[in-house]
Amino acid sequence: MISYRTSYAYNLTQKEDDDEKIESFKAASYQAYQGEKLVKRYNPYSYWCMTRLADTHNIGRKRGGVLNALKMIKAHTLSIGVRSDYLYPVEEQKFIAANTPGGVYAEIDSFFGHDGFLVETEAVSGIIKEFMATPGKH
Image 1: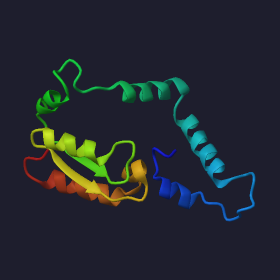
Image 2 (image 1 turned 90 degrees about the vertical axis):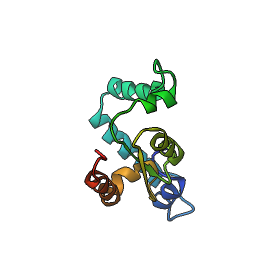
Image 3 (image 1 turned 45 degrees about the vertical axis):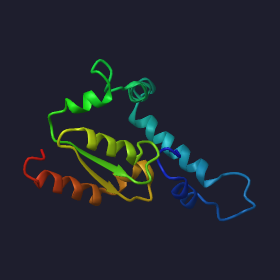
Image 4 (image 1 turned 135 degrees about the horizontal axis):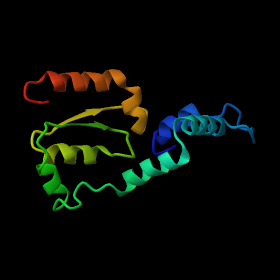
C-alpha cells in the first residue's frame, strides 16, 4: 500500500486514536478492504500478468535503447507527474517528456502519492483539457 499512497497520507488516515490498542487496527481493516476490492476486480492470474508486464516492460528493448525509442514517438505526448508518487517518480515523467519529440510535462501536487492521479481528478482533467486545446498537441 505504501507504493500507492505516501507514508504521510497512510499514517494520517490510518492513525489509531487509542495508543493502548493491540488489535483491530485501522490499517489492517483498510488493507483488508482494499484486498477485497482487488479480488472482485481481478482474478489472481490477470493481476499477476499485469504486474509482470509492468515489471518487465522496457520500451528500449529491440529499439536501440530507451532514448532511441522515445525519439521514435510521433504523437505529441503529455506526461503528468505527481510530486508524491513513489511508484512512478516525477523524474521519470520529466525524462519521458524531455526526450520525446513534442513531449510536454505537467505536474500536480497531491497528498495521495501514486493514487493522486485517481483522486485529483479536477487537476488532472484541467491539465489534459489544456493539452488537448493547444493546437498541434494531440
